[in-house]
Amino acid sequence: MPKVNRFPKMAALQKFRAMKLGYDENLSEAIGIAEALKYAIFKNLSRYRRGIEKEREKPEKRELYEKLDWETFRTFQLAAKDGWPFVGGKVETPEDYRRAVFGKFGEEVGKRIEEWARKIIEATPEEYLKDERKFFNYVWKPHRDDPIEY
Image (tube, rainbow, N blue to C red; front, side):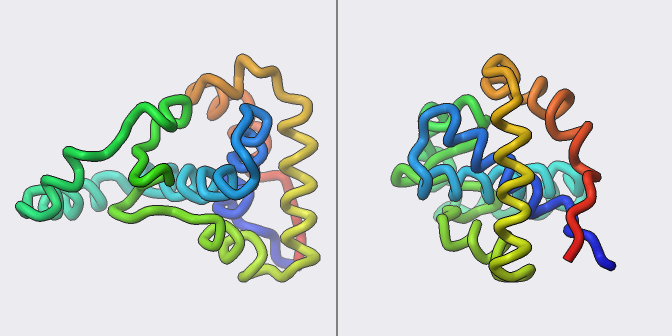
């Protein structure tokens, strides 16, 4: 039986991390998908960096990147645009999260992904939730390959 890949698992973990840190559910879903995208980009950084550097040099894009808010989601090290997470050149929304977690795998598997993430986050010390490096090393790494079958 195939297993759920890492991307929707990261999105769900980050959603529940954001919720435990006090964000509402819609914004937490947007943060979740933005964090999953950020990690995917970092994984392929050398290829991505060349493209984004060229993109940011365009006059119309330079102004956009200069106006991004880096305080709203500082804990997550994400930029914000109009109050929503901004990564990979676009704003991320709850709909993007739902497509990644429920759209590909269906409602039943999406609920299993979220239940898996909820249990992990409930047991995670707040210290790890507030620190990107600790979250990655002590929450993500030990659980990223947990099997969730579909």
